[in-house]
Amino acid sequence: MNAIRDFHAHIYFDADQLDRAQKLAEAAHAKFGVPVGRFHTNPVGPHPRGSCQLTVRPEQFGDFAQWMALHRNGLTIFAHTSTGEDFADHTEHVIWFGPSETLDLSIFAEAL
Image 1 (cartoon, rainbow, N blue to C red):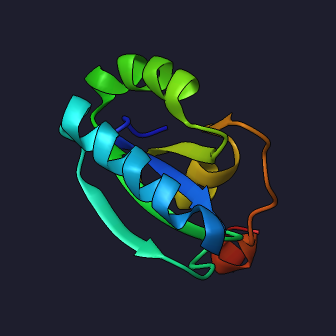
Image 2 (image 1 turned 45 degrees about the vertical axis):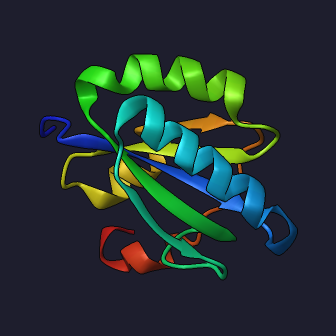
């Protein structure tokens, strides 16, 4: 297994939750300095709903995870490692905050 370069934490949201997701991303950025990606209002890649990616350094992920567990405001967060092994990163090396959801793994067809 490769080393963990960083973690991706995807905030999942529906259209009526966009404002809540944006506020959560802003708060995470203010507290941890994490980069905030684009807000996709439709499924992108393996993600089943709208999402926004936060990139978290390995040395700050423990504190980030504790904070996110308490501040996710009812939103589901899908967090995973970034090691370069995309299929494993999205299936084996994952943490869910809130209910888990079914990913579209067809984009990793070569790994299936």
